[in-house]
Length: 68
Image (tube, rainbow, N blue to C red; front, side):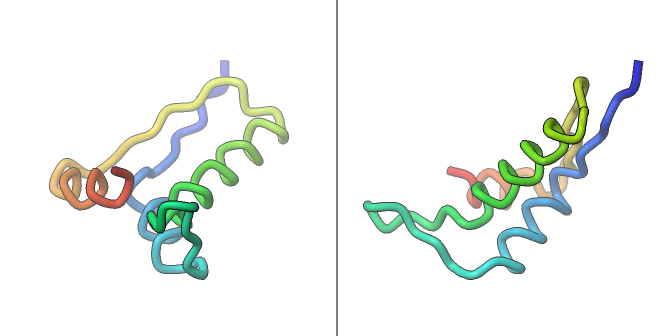
């Protein structure tokens, strides 16, 4: 069995600061979430069946603030 590991801290940082701003109808910033989902869906399309996301514990509050 192959296991694909996703560096959650890196992915959120990369998409938060690397993509142009995108907002939903309520004005909430969604670029980072959309970028991460696009990356994960691309992994699935290329055959990834088993995946797990890892994140730095020191960045947990910052990541949580980005997603919620």
